[in-house]
Length: 335
Image (cartoon, rainbow, N blue to C red):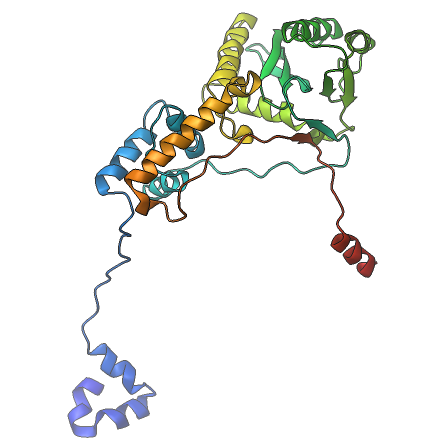
C-alpha cells in the first residue's frame, strides 16, 4: 500500500496510519547484504593441513582414540600436527561424534590413601565376564598399581575364591619384589577381599590392607575405572565362549593397557613407562618436539612456547579436604 500510494499521500502519513516505522520501510528498499562470515585467523591451519589431520583421525589406528591420546602418541613418535582443541574443532566441523571429557570422581573423607611412587599402593577387585551359556560367568581378578596404573597381576577363573586370590596376590608381590612394610593393598568389602586366608597372607608379607566403606564404589575408583576401560573397548564382546577366549582377550587388553595406552591421569604416559621410570626421556622428547613445532610456526601458539604436562607426584584415594581460615569463617557465619 505504501508503494502504491506514496506519491499521492506521502510516505510519512501512510506509515503513521499503518503504524509502521518509516525506517523499516526505507530499509526494505535496500538490497540484502551478503553474509561475509568471520575471517580465518592468519595462524590457523591451511585447508590442506586440516584435511591431513582429519585423515589421521580417520585411520584405523586412531579412530577410537580421544584427541588428547592422539596428540600424546604422535609426540612420542616425534610428530606434532596440531593442538588437542584443534582436533576437536575439526571433528565438530564435520559433525562427527567426539569423546566427551568425563568428570573426576568425588572425594570422600575415608579411606585416605596416598601413593608417591610405584609399588606403594595397590588396588584390586573382581568383576564378572559374561559367558555364552545362560547364567555362566567368568571372574576376572585384577591388581593395579595406583601410582602408575600398571596392572601387576590378573587372572580369569571359573569362580570367586579366596584361595585363588591368595595365589594371585602372592605371585604379584613376588614378581614385583615387595618388601616388608612397603605396600598397602586396598579393596572393597567382597568376601574374597575380607577372607582370613588373604588377611594371613598379607600379614605374613608385611602388606597393609585397607577396605572401602560399604556401598561406596568411589572408595575404590582406580579398579572401577580400569574395569570400565576394559568393558568400553570397541572390541569387547557381549559374551565369551570358552574360558580360554576370555583369557586371550584379557591378555591382549592388559598388554595394550600397560604398554600402549596413554592414560590421562598420568600425563598421557603409558603405565609401563611410569612404573619402570622410563618416562623422563619421553617427557623430554615431547618438549623438544613442541619447541621445534613452535620455531616453525610461532604464530599458531598464541600463549607462547607450549608446555608439556608433568607426571603427578601424588596420587590419592580420597584426598583430605583441608579447611582454610576463610572456609571456617564462612561456615561459622552461616551457622
